[in-house]
Structures are given as structure tokens and as C-alpha cells.
Length: 183
Image 1 (tube, rainbow, N blue to C red):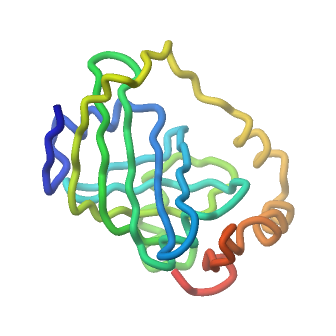
Image 2 (cartoon, rainbow, N blue to C red):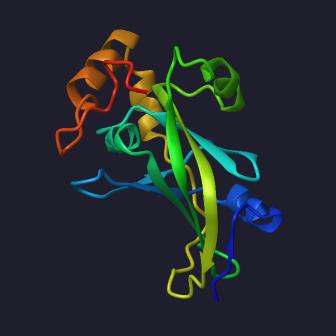
């Protein structure tokens, strides 16, 4: 069944790097829990206690609002093929945007994708598996290209206008820090 660690073991690192899909969960101190699926080549394991993912412009920016407020984040990885398993990483996240002192160090770790908005870095305080026995086996996953095509078709001004209209405040009315230096 389940096991737990204070760091990311090497075999779990291999498991994480093999996944094409992962989930990010955050919540404000008072308000809705947010759970977002993530894909593309946007995740990096920086060391045994740190992971980061490149965040692209999307329909909302709940994760930024929650991380700005309290930093709590859980990442989940599920085996959709092979041996059943679910892995969760728990910890505190920080928001890194252009202008942040570490942006220039972290950004080159990821591919050039249109619509890059920010990077989230999670300091892992625990990792735990569960059986995953009820997770379905899914055929080969293929990347979707709709988000990349959408962002490619926008000018920088259009993406900025979209962010200002859709990514500044969470559904609970919290600031995402997008128009301030809250990060």
C-alpha cells in the first residue's frame, strides 16, 4: 500500500519524470479548493526536495492567488499504465515571475512555449504513495496542442490583455499578484 518520505526517492523521481500528466492542488485559508491538471513538458525536479513547473496563461490563475496567500500546494501523479500507484508531493510553493531574482536561472530549464506566465517552485516537506488500484489504465497519452496554438496566435499585447481580464483575481476575490509585486 502506501509509503512516505521526507524527500523524493530516486525511484519516485523516475516515476514522476515518466508522467505526461500531473495535478496541482491549492486552497486559500478560506474559500474554494483548486485542482488543476498540467501537461506538456513543464515539470522539472530540481533536487530531492524541490520541484518546479512552468505555468502557461490559462482561463484562471487560482494557483497564484492561493500560493500568494499561504503557499500550500500538493502535486499528484497517477500511473495510468504499468503498475498502479499514486504519488503526492506536499509542501510550500513560491511564485516566480519575470523580474523575480531567480527567473533567469529557472526559465532556461523549460522549453520555449508561448504564453509563459510564471513558474511555481515547490519545496517538498513530504512525499507519499497510495495504491492507485482504482485508477484506470489509459492508452498512450498524447499531448494536446490547443493551448500552444491559442497562445501562438496572440500578440504579446493580446496575451497581456487576456491576463488582465482573467488572471488578476481568483474566483474567491483574492489577488493573484499578477499586477503587483506580491510574489
